[in-house]
Image 1 (cartoon, rainbow, N blue to C red):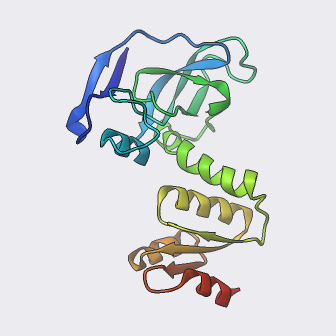
Image 2 (cartoon, rainbow, N blue to C red):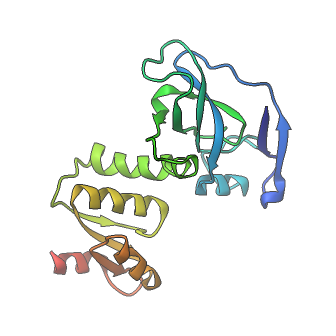
Length: 203
């Protein structure tokens, strides 16, 4: 199978395609035949050599993928060969196939394309963990989203809108109209206003 490696810090030209043995899933893992990868900000920083959690160079980047399960090990109760899935890989995703712990793999809805699914794991799981798992978000809650126009910010905005929370979001002024169209209630120009005071005044 093929993998894409970061061979040294730099621009996209440092990426190199290499052949590797097809991995065998270990206990609790599934193997995914990758259809689409997400290019996450962490991948870009890692390629530049400035992401602190990246493995030592050279390594295979790739935080998120979508594809088809083509092998299942023991200890996987909820997935089978042929399932259409997306997964949080945390490196190693730039490959034809990748093995992932089953708890980091999620079935795709029937209407969901591989391209859409590969864009979900990092941003939406991060936002969901913060808001729902850790924050116990409920309808009517008020939420301040920093960097509302970024990947995690937009995911947080979507989750808040679905649950029915009131949203305040910091962003540069040129992004305010876009955020209002996405459902943000109160955009805040963090460059020229004290966001804490703005939220206090509005609530």
